Image 1 (tube, rainbow, N blue to C red):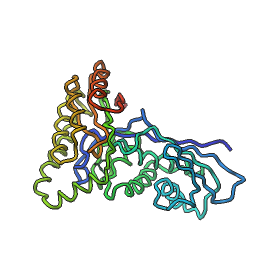
Image 2: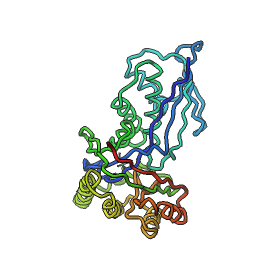
Image 3: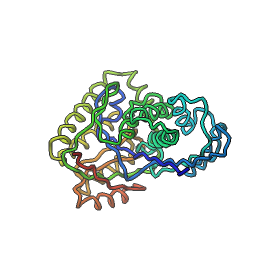
Length: 316
Ligand code: MEV
């Protein structure tokens, strides 16, 4: 039996992180420059239920039965079994690798779950739909942080730009003209669950101070949607920078991310902001294609441990 492979992209949030948890709109795009991958090697002579998980990136090599059910890799596999109504799994080995930096706001957890769900369901002969894959990645994300909005699993499982409002069906975003982004990794882990929980506590103590900021961020996301679908992508620059200022006001940025944003703007970026959970992880900068290398070099000089230049392609 041949090996079966599946993959899922990373993601970046262009507009609206954190406010999206409070039902304001947000925009995210997949980033295929980094990917999670799951490869299944069938083991027809193995004992039924013998599932070996090999995840060299995190130094894990164990049987599914040895892992606690809340382990995210185990949860992803068991969720497929449950979804397909199977009482047991045939023997197989699954090798999971990823080039998506962990805890960096690029959706590593959701992408790994999506790749596993796809590979396992394909192997079992019942490929899950993108929505089913998204639901499984959402369930796993709940372990990472209690109240995910659902945007990460949605953009990753559907692998297309999305306009997302929590609790509503997502909308695919049409990208009228391509634009170039430089992603800069601060090198600090972004503890999304902690940052979301901390903001929740501050919000609950003083909702009147936070509601207007969420409204501003939501309005920016709506304006950005119009630009992406019909306008000149250069006009996204000031919207990105304004969004960053509001995220800073929410207390989810940090000196390292602020320094990267400032450095990107000084190097000629049209706009820049943190992306994802914040307090570490990644920021993004919109750059004219011919300036992307300058922006990238400026980010590395300002402390970025890694940069990725990616093009958000126009959609047909
Ligand atoms: C994390 O990628 C985005 C946040 O808005 C959390 C969420 O939407 O669940 C910070």
